[in-house]
Amino acid sequence: MHLLPYDSETIVSSLTKKEVLTQLNRVTREVNFLDQRTLAKDEVLFNGFIGRKGFRISKTVERGDTFLPLILGQVQATPRGCIIFINYRLFPGAVFFLAFWTIVLLAFTIFYSFVFTNYAYAVLCLALGLFNYGIAMYFFNRQVKVSRNVFHQLINFQMKD
Image (cartoon, rainbow, N blue to C red):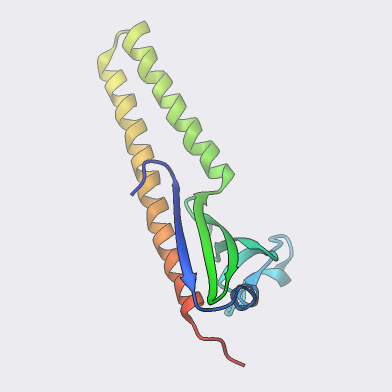
């Protein structure tokens, strides 16, 4: 478990780079949430973009999840398959709100420690800030685990002709 909402891994696959990107492309859709026709279907596992060198995806969900990780990946070909470099991180909006509330509660802690000298409020603000950050990290790591399992199942699945 990391102290920042970030995780990474490297996967060595016996599939070729083209097979991995094709398989990802088959279960990934670019979604426009304003158009009902592009919303997820049963065979769609990820939302995002698949390029020639890598991908930027997230697991499909039926309802919003603030701590859903953004999966950034690069695929490099090797003579016997490929290497997939994956980074899991929070979406920028979630990072903004996590940083905002952490900074606000830390500022209140400092304010109540040195300006008002009300240590009970200072401790309360610090505890709330740590609790907020701890909950965010817990839910982020839980969602990374779920997304990682879905991705691994997809990569280990054998190609069908």
